[in-house]
Amino acid sequence: MNKRYKLAVATASIALGFSVIQAKPAQAATLSGPLYIYAAASLTDTLPQVEALYQLSNPNVTFINTFGASGTLANQIVMGTNPNPVDIFFSVSQAPLNTLENNNKVIEGTRENVLTNTLAIITPINSTISISSVQDLLKPEVRQVAIGNPAVVPAGGFAQQLFTNSGISDQIQSKLVFGSSVRDVLDKVSSASNDMIDAGVVYTTDALTALDKVKIVYTPPINSYSPIVYGSAVLQQTQNLDAARDFNFFLTTSQASPVFQTFGFSTIPEPMTTGGSIAVGIVALMMKPKVKAKAKVKGERREKVRC
Image (cartoon, rainbow, N blue to C red; front, side):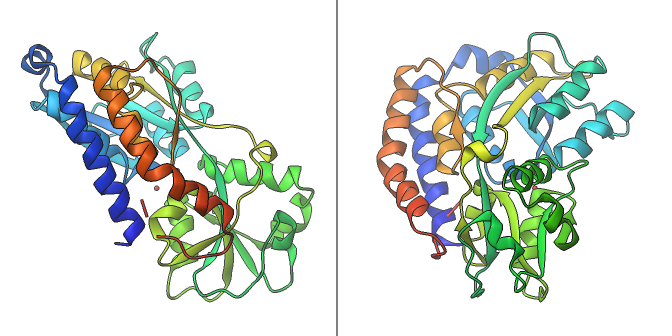
C-alpha cells in the first residue's frame, strides 16, 4: 500500500469522524438489512469508505458489493443473471444507466448524478519512454497501449473518443490491447511480467491507487473526451427499498463528498449541512494542494488512493 493511498484513507477517516455530527438515531433504528450494490470497478477502493461513513448513522445496514465494468454489470441485470437482487447500480457513464432505464429496471425518480472523473495516460513506473501528448502514443517505441474494451468498459469508450479527437484513431488501433475493466487495464500496465504494454489509458483515480507501479505521464485536456459522470439509481428488483433509497441519496450529500474527493473524484455540489461543511473544509485543506502539485508534475512518481 503506497503512501498516497494511506493518506487518502486517513483523510477519509477524518471525514468519517466529523460526520458523526450528522448522525440520525431515529433513522438508524428503522433502516436495516443488506444492500446489494453493483458498482463500477473504479469505485473499488472508495465505495467501502463511503459505506462505512453511512453506517455511523445506520449500523444495521450492511453492504455486499460487486465491482466490474459498468456495461457488463448492466447487461447482467438486464439478462437477470445476477445471483441476488441488486438494490443499487452505481455506474460510470450514462449509457449503462440508460440501458437499465430503457429496460424498466430503474425506480423512477431515483437516478442521481454523483461524481466526475478524468482520464490519465500511464506507463510502467520504470519506463523511459517520453510521452507528453496523446500523439506520442504513436511513437515506434510504444509497442502496445492498453484500454478498456469499449463494448462494455466506459473508460475504453472515453479513450477511443480521446484518440478520435486527437487525430490518431486510425493509426493507433493496431496497438490496442483491451482489458475487461479499467482495473484490468491498470493491472496490465503495472504487472511485473508485462514486457510489451508500454502505456495505458485509465481514470486518474485508478492511476492514483498504483503509483508504486505506474506513473501518470500525461493528463489529456478534459475537452478531448465527453464528461465522465458517475450516476446511481435504485433498481426495481430491490428487496430493501427504504434503505436503498436512503443510501442512494446519501451518495450525493455533503457528508459523502469529502470521502470521494480524497480518492481523487470530483463531486457534484449539493447543499451542505454543518458537519459536511466541516469535513469538506478539513479535506480540502489537506488534499487540494497535493492534488494540484500532482497535476503539474508530469511523469514523476506520486504517492495515494475495476470500470
